[in-house]
Structure formats: C-alpha cells, structure tokens
Length: 421
Image 1 (cartoon, helix red, strand yellow):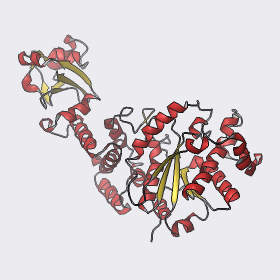
Image 2: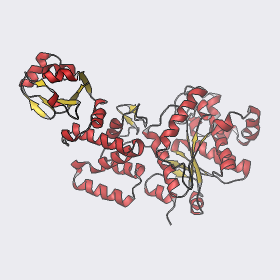
Image 3: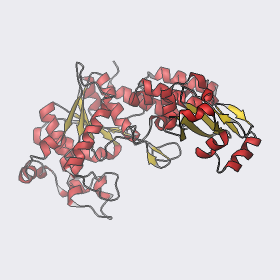
Image 4: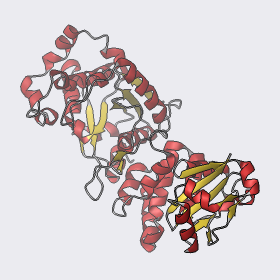
C-alpha cells in the first residue's frame, strides 16, 4: 500500500528526509506539523508547497497541525535571509495569524474524523521563563553544534544577533512541546528549514528519549532560475485584496511550458495518471495550453472558490476574444473593472448619447479627441467587440452589456470599460 512518502517522492516533493521516516509512515497514521511565521497578513503562492503537503498528509489518514508562529514571529528566522527581519508587535502578529487561519481553512478539514488542528506557539512560548528555557533546552545544545548549521554559518560575515541565533532553539522547543502535548513526531518544511528541524529532532531525542522525524520540501524556482511565487517582481498573494483573483489566475495561466507538468504534480491533487493525460493532450496541441488552463483553474478554485474562478475565467476569455460578450453578467464585468481603466457616466446621459470620442479620452485609450478621431479613422478602436470607424458615433443605452457596461478596445490588447451609474 502506497504511503505518504511514496506520493511525495512520485511528485518530486521530497528534498530530504530523516532515515527512518519511511518505516514510521508505513507503521500507521502520523501527526505532523508545518510552521508559518505570521510576518504578513497573507500567505503567498510560495507557501503553497507546505500547505499542499499537509493536505496530502490528511488524505493519507494523518493529522496535520498548522503551527502559527505568534511566538517565533517575534524573534525572526534567519534561514535564507541576508539581514535581520524587523520584529513585529504582538498585536500585528495576532492580526496576521487570524488572516492566515482563514486562508489555510480552504485546504484542510478542521471538522472531519481526523481534524486538522491550528495552534499558536505564543501559547507556550510567552509564559516560558528565560531560566526555564536555558535549563530545559539550552543545556542540550553545544555552541559548535549550532555554528555548524547553514542558517547560522551563512550569516556570520554579515552579522547575526543573539535573538536570531536563538531561533533554532526556540523552534526546536516547539517540536518538543508538540511531541509531548500532541503526539506529533514529524515536522515538514522547506529545505532551508533542515537545520531547524534536525535541531528539534535532537532535542526530542535528548529530552524525551523519543524518535521524531523530518521531511523537507524543495524550494521552487522556475525553469529560468527565478524564484517561484513572484509576478513582475511582486509576491503573488492568496489574499484577494493583495493579488486579485484575476491576476492570481493569470499567474498560473502564464506558467512556462517547461514548468507546468512539475507545477501540476506539486499543486494539483489529481492522480499522476490524469496529469500524464493532460500533458499528452498538451503535446498534441501545445498552442491550446491545456495544462496551464487546468493548473490555473484548479489552484484558483482551491484558493478563491469555484464561483470566483468561473467569473475570472469568463473575464479572461473576454479579453482574449474567446467568448460571446452578451453572455457575460455583471459579476464578470466587475472582475474586469478591477483590472481595467474605467470611466463612469450617468445612465441618463447615455439615453441621449455620449460621444465615443469622449469615452475614448475619458478611459485613457486616446490622449486627446484628435487622437481618438485619427484612431477611429484608421479603424483602430472597437466597441463591444465591433470595429468602429465613425468619429461621430455615440455611445447609447443600447450598447450596454449586462445593463451597465461598455467594453472599449484599442488595437488588439488595450481594453477599458465605460460603466453607467
């Protein structure tokens, strides 16, 4: 019978694992945790690999623990960082943790027979006294052991505060606490967390004579070598207020052909045979971008829901000329309104007509009325998908789509909306 480790290995999700993990997973359900430091009020797509790993764990009968770092977030993890992070207030950490909680609930079942649990390590770290920590944790680690860890070595030249130097021991204590209180014997994280995870395993062995395990996931880069999870240099967030669902969908739709199969294996819960079938269809007709469409639809649905995804797809099809505009409802146009330049006009004005030349200037598709007239003479503009050549054309109530909008286009790619209010 396949184990979680078999699933992860087949999907390329294993960067490294402790020696006896396979044996442990074969012996029965496991409780595992992933930590998220709430340093922002949203997770981003770079966090999806560990999130998906917990979802797979639950599907294989395990119990996932989401550990929000309300305590460790006040310290700051030096792993993968060239300089110390700014420390957040308790109030900011608490607010961020609540926002992250809602996002994770899209992936994990908190009410089923083996429900996921969400904990905040501030609950046991904040009451912990310094003397108690030094006595029960610090005594188990030598300075030479800590200096050998890559997260520490990589920062020695730039400088490392004692606060960040201590982070490894604080995270190790998390593992020990969860081992004792929750029966958790597996920690999952990114490959940059290997040193912190093995420190926790060491502490469990020394303080409890117990055996704990670790599994680290690959840190994703694209085929070009760029760090995964950014679009135009900015993080792609799970929060729709930070990254709109439309832009979120487009991020996945624009995946490079060289990356899309790997991304499907990482972020889709489809059986590998289904993914192979999608890739075979893509190979027969690469221009269709079938794999990218399936990837974008599935991940956007997981994060934003099926209804939002269907509206986003409809909006995307409008901008790429693949749909009948008359079929789009107001919700689809609201998605577009969040992405395009919008000029508002009173409905009453449309009853008598509004010059198209004025609409082109108001939406920014033309720099001046003269520019608009020249563009219309050259048939460079369209209204609701139809080319326009008459500079005297009026926009009227009969042009409204979904009873409220008019879609204007300059050339093939530049769109704007008129909204009747």
